[in-house]
Amino acid sequence: MIPHRFRESLGLSEGSEVIVRLEDGELRLSTPRQALKQAQHALSLLKKSGECVVDEFLAERKQEAESE
Image (tube, rainbow, N blue to C red; front, side, top):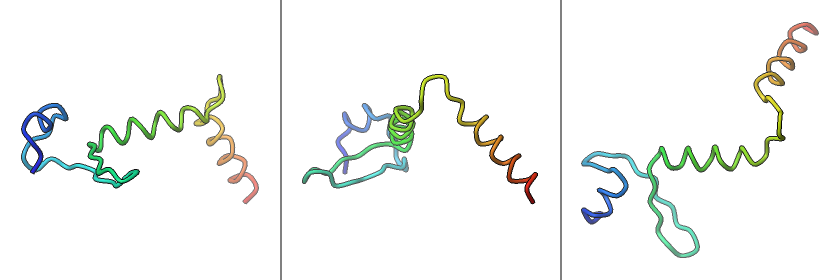
């Protein structure tokens, strides 16, 4: 059971989903929303300034479609 003050801090209620992982010998809990934010941040560090990955993806798809 997760103590009330921790559940409240994380915005958890009965039936809420959590992600549990073991990291450096510690049990860590996060919400799916927190995990998504962490992933978005990590991926944003890989993106070059001024780069639009959507435009690149669409251009690649267009090129692939034209070559078929």
